[in-house]
Length: 298
Image (cartoon, rainbow, N blue to C red):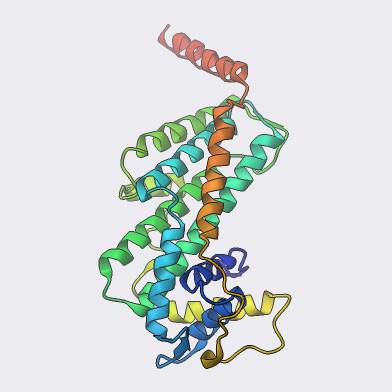
């Protein structure tokens, strides 16, 4: 299965559609998304006395998806992701992986993957609707690349199982990763690793095919839409046509995805502040390292 083809976080796109068109029901907003993904370029939809083209809707969705991944500011959001990643590296390598440690690692990876899917969908929509927006496309590409690197660091330098002891070698291996993540917080997402660093850390995404100019973004959007329809359990028996989208059961705008991500980060941040990891184990490992350094000098 290719990247994102399990459609785990596809609801982020429907959340964005609902926020873009608050005067219609969520079901009809989802119908608009389906039609936009699969319709020809001259597609138009009319509701609330307004007519929208396929390109206009794609731009609106791309903007809403990107904004939904920023709960305070882009800089603060990225800073907190790095902070959470650094703490997971530390807590998962302090001597023992508790079930609480493992649960937070799992929740963090799920959150990062949702961010990644959301921004990648925005990237593809913008590639199709506004290919000349090179500066914005590059910004999205960098964000996606940074998220993939952080995700890989967590997977590469933490155990994927709870209730296990962590030995000194694992602690020493993870220690520079923690320091690196902390130091990157002052750089924003516009930093870059050297090819040698990416290779040694096993986090190289600079040549990911889906982030290159040759990648067919429109085909990907159509494919992911068709897969989502296949996975969907309750498909309505009849879908309204684009010119008959109802304005009944209207809802106020609610930035569901932004609130969800903000709550998750706040939850993770609050848990870390409780200082969960066993400080005694951490100090034992530090003393062992110091003792080893003294022996080497003599």
